[in-house]
Length: 82
Image (tube, helix red, strand yellow):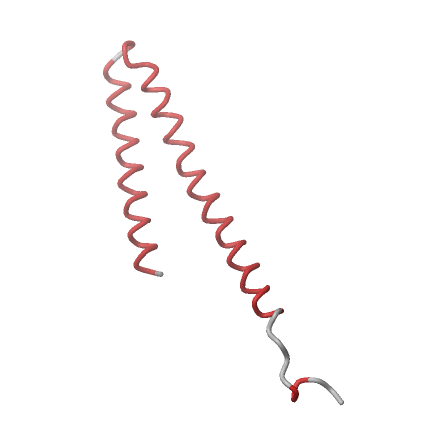
């Protein structure tokens, strides 16, 4: 699991660096590339927010799933008070 997280983190970093560089390039190219600049600028803000939201939701789902598994395990005979 840790290896997959590291790979995904590296891909995310590379993607963000690419977005920041493309934003800079489109800003320097002038008015003809203004729509691409705006799209790149929007993506530079939206992508990190989406990555954070996906991670947050994953942690919530994982926590709830582990609680469901613990609650659904049958009790052994020795656990019930007599």
